[in-house]
Length: 253
Ligand SMILES: Cc1cc2nc3c(=O)[nH]c(=O)nc-3n(C[C@H](O)[C@H](O)[C@H](O)COP(=O)(O)OP(=O)(O)OC[C@H]3O[C@@H](n4cnc5c(N)ncnc54)[C@H](O)[C@@H]3O)c2cc1C
Image (tube, rainbow, N blue to C red; front, side):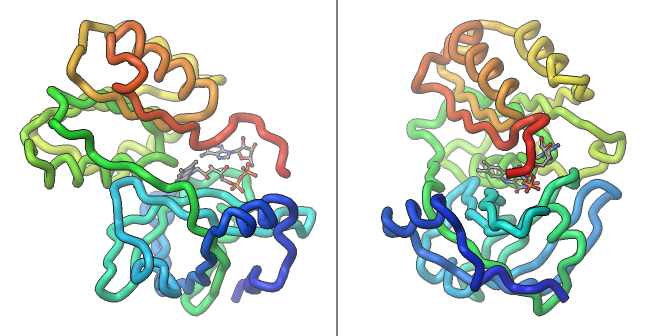
């Protein structure tokens, strides 16, 4: 059983979120499951999160994990298959050496953890784009899947997506990607600093005017790929939604 983080201090980040009026929710673990050797899925109830907040694609929440120094730090995780009818959802964790992963690996049903909701916002553009250009990795898989589900439920579900998926482990290829028949996937093995994916995207550039780009990789690759979508693929500033999901070689805060 893992101790709840409810009573610990959240430092300046917590103070700022409180000032901004962010809402807190206590999440309770309901299930745990290994998807691959490098990826796990936990079930949760949201302590009111989904009764208060309308669901949107790629919706994420800030969770307060205790780091190696006993301090809380917030990390973002994406809701998988959120169900407002019973305030339940899953969170999926790409395993690496970090506080979030350590907590998730030992979490058991009944464990609780604190979360804050603020900053998550995304909607499928209208009118529907001609096609989607999507770049992500295992950390982005939950968001990427919710995006593909939302495209399927949109006004034009037949719009195709081209996906560049950066994988770090062979087992990542067994992850449950929700591709449809009309989608194309490019698997790119992560090299030392993520350059292979950047080169793969840049090397495939074409005039994709009218498409929409979505990018969630490490910080360096997110910047480079989103720049390539905007300029080489001619999507412009408003044709791309990009957010760095993690920072390579980051010291634990
Ligand atoms: C909006 C948003 C949604 C996200 N949703 C998810 C999600 O659903 N599932 C998910 O797994 N992640 C998700 N992430 C990424 C997750 O928040 C980060 O990976 C985070 O850094 C993990 O925190 P940590 O405490 O485990 O490690 P940290 O203390 O941040 O980092 C510890 C070490 O691990 C390395 N590291 C951190 N993340 C990764 C990674 N993904 N791969 C390889 N090495 C890494 C760092 O470089 C550092 O060396 C999301 C991020 C954002 C911004």
